[in-house]
Image 1 (tube, rainbow, N blue to C red):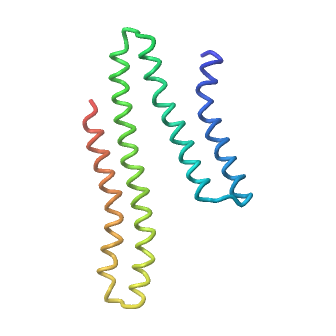
Image 2: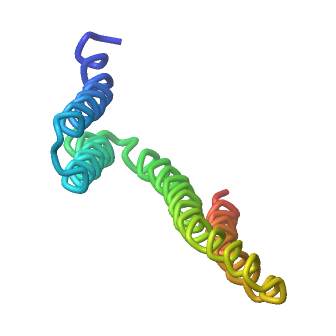
Length: 145
């Protein structure tokens, strides 16, 4: 492994760490939290796009005969990324839904104990989002050889 390989592997990590440090400093100085969070998401998306595009561009530019095998491996890799994204994003959405519905359900139950059945259904609907994401992930992973 050459020095250039090490630099290219460490560069995204260094970029993300510096982005986090800049965001923490901005929030501690009283900058807008929403804008700082959007900048964090944009920097993560940029690093993700660069890390996804560069290997495909290098394999296409070299034109080596193993490009078909690399493309097949890339398809499996993309399937793994899709499964991870389906599970991760659905769990984040389910967590947000349960985080908003559970306190409301507790408040409704404390005022009227008969409302427990109706309130728990809304909490379970939020958890169902995560289960659907996991189901999609299982379906994606079952298609991989």
